[in-house]
Length: 123
Image (cartoon, rainbow, N blue to C red):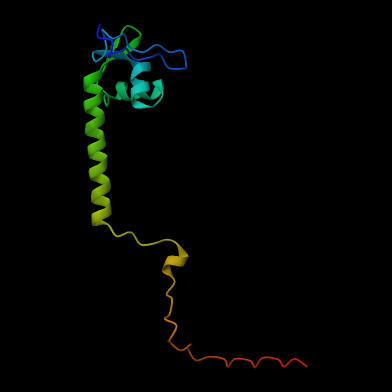
């Protein structure tokens, strides 16, 4: 084995990572959750709905790492396209009161109304 290439170190949580011989091939639901930064329950739910490509093998789910990464990339692109389309096409009216206020220019006169009271004199 090349000394410059080292297997991934085990995380501080005590979980083991993939052995170097299996790296890049298959992962289980816990390893997939670690890869996607989500919970194992979320991974299993996505797999059962068919949104994440995997197969139920025995009591657990098995995923091909390459396919999971492809799905992640595709989903990132779709969501970025949605955000881009939303920001380009839709002008969202402001719901904040401060944004709706019309501020008059300082050189404009106040509208006619009650006259100002004179300032009190100090003795």
